[in-house]
Structures are given as C-alpha cells and as structure tokens.
Image (cartoon, rainbow, N blue to C red; front, side, top):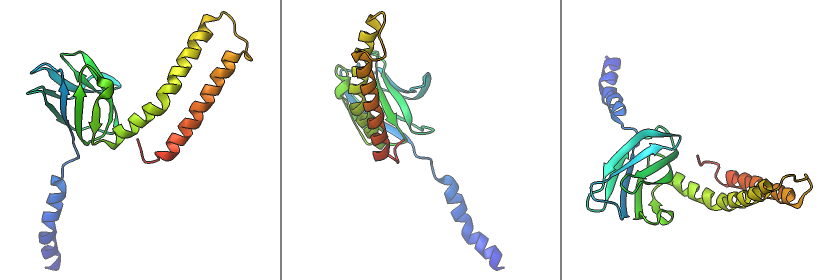
Length: 176
C-alpha cells in the first residue's frame, strides 16, 4: 500500500521532468539598413548550407529562434545585404544592435561564448595580420635561409602566438 501511494505521489514529478524543454536560442536584432521583409538566417559555420533559424525584418527588427546542438561557430546572414557576421553561440538569449554598413561595430549581448570569441579575436587577429605580412615578404623571395631575419621574425611571432594561446586557455578554462 505504501509503495502504491508513493508511486501515485511521485508520478507528477516524473511527468514534469519530461516536460522540461531544452534551452533554446533567441536572437532579437535591430540592424539599421536592412530592407523591410528581407530574410535573416543563422547557419552553421562549418556547414554554410545548414540553416538553423530564420526570420524576416519587420519595422527594422528581426527575431530568430531555434535550438543549437552545442555552442559553436555560427554565421548570421543578412540576405538582402548579402553580408554575414560570425558568432560563437550557445542556446542563449541574445540582443544584437548595429548598422549593416559597419558590421565590425555590431553589438552582441547575452552570449558568454560570443564574449569569449570577441576577446579571442581581439587577442589573435593582430598576430594573424603580422604573420600574413611576413608570409607575403617570405613568398616574394626566391630563397630564404633558415637564419634570415624574416624567418627569425616569423618564429618570434609564432612563439608569441603560442604563449598568448596558452594564456587564453588558462584564463578561459570553462569556455568552449
């Protein structure tokens, strides 16, 4: 009798646990310069043909909602402008504001993963630009010895990248 009563009282707990929804992604955006009724959609950064969420611009704003399997690199695509912006997202509630003509200044709030990604870009983009310049100079030479100053400069930048990478990982242990 006690077992039956326990099961009757516990049954609502089991059914409630099954009704819990997985976290979902919601992006509310206001990006000036988008055409009215134009499409805005989110794609997987590694599978650009995989549309995960889409919405349409209405009165200068849009909303996308969906579920992401895991935090990762995604792209928000602004259809009429034929522009896209990389985002590192999880299932977060995100607010996006800016102007389509200046996506570098796009303000994204509500995603800890995106905040870490922005910090990552701020840290490593200057190193990548340095390596690109050195690579162009190296490639313009027919033969460069291992002890050439350009090769030494290249090795120095690579070493700086490794140290910055180790520091970034150390500071962001819980980050994707």
